[in-house]
Length: 288
Image (cartoon, rainbow, N blue to C red; front, side, top):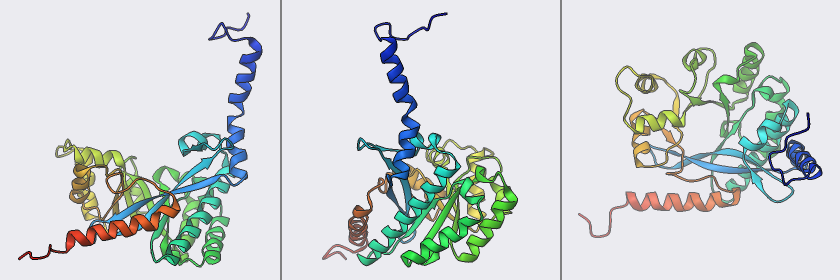
């Protein structure tokens, strides 16, 4: 049977070329990765008690040869275990380098970096993290590694690596807490320092549609009892900011606070944010 083309005007030769170009996209992503095309954007996380910016989440992007900056949803499907390891290593180095640059500029922050499951399964992960911290002169406590609850597909090996990371002094965070079905049992086997509440849960609480007995309200009550630092993700307006406080979150992250930004923009943003909060805290001249 002859081939059927979606566009009759397109010649078979042109369709073949287009297909090759589309098929080369994963290869382009891998080439950009190995050519050092990883760039990190940073989204601030603020302490809801002190209202200070205390850390940032490092978000990986990939710069392609045509100059386009692409998000993980586009390039991650093209990556296998080896590429994910390279991505983590480059992202970690860039994030720690940024911490040093910010500290030299008078801005002290912590940084959260996503740890892929395949890297967590490799015992060499601990040495990789330790060597990176040492080479950049960054204290382990200023680094937090984020893991998805679904990451634990090899629990014995991965738990051993996590135990070594904890001994190193690195913080551990469960990302997207509230999105899965076994979050709470996982808390009994891994000593997480931080729980990052799934953005959808934050939005459900903000919409005030969680009636008693629903999963959202159950999790809200649970968060108030747990002895973890809680970060509310997806804080995009005043309603979700109130929701973050109502669920007992100590920290908040989202567009209502700041969008992801380049490393060189972070010090200026922190100074402007601090100046604004000090103005809010200082009574106006002549006030009683």
